[in-house]
Image (cartoon, rainbow, N blue to C red; front, side):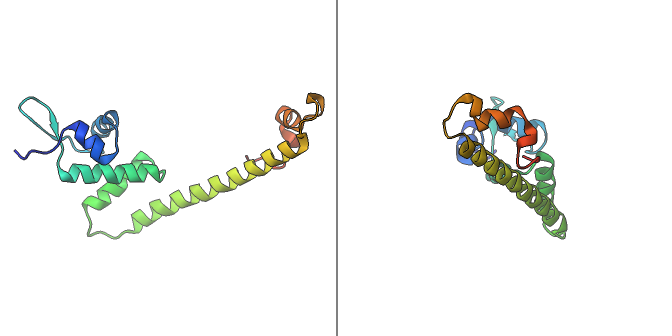
Length: 141
């Protein structure tokens, strides 16, 4: 059996926490690794590459099922990449929508802060707007 690395070392090298590695194994995102005679997990270079792929995809906000599909595509590299493109396009659309929502939220908060300027609470725009959503500039934040 090749040496491989322990789960702790796999976590250190991949940047994925030990409980998360176990979770990925449990949901079959990461194949169960070989085990030593003492029943300790041993991760090979391919496992570490897969963990890095998963970590990077999670950092970009991809959901687990999208990552599962992308891993399946990666495991079968001779097929067309249309599915991968569609997954990335869907994630991009989500990010664009989130940016719009955050921009509306930023504008609303700026208006609240500008309207307040540390007067009295009875004149406070922050309290007023939080009390009545109809006073917001955007209903979609």
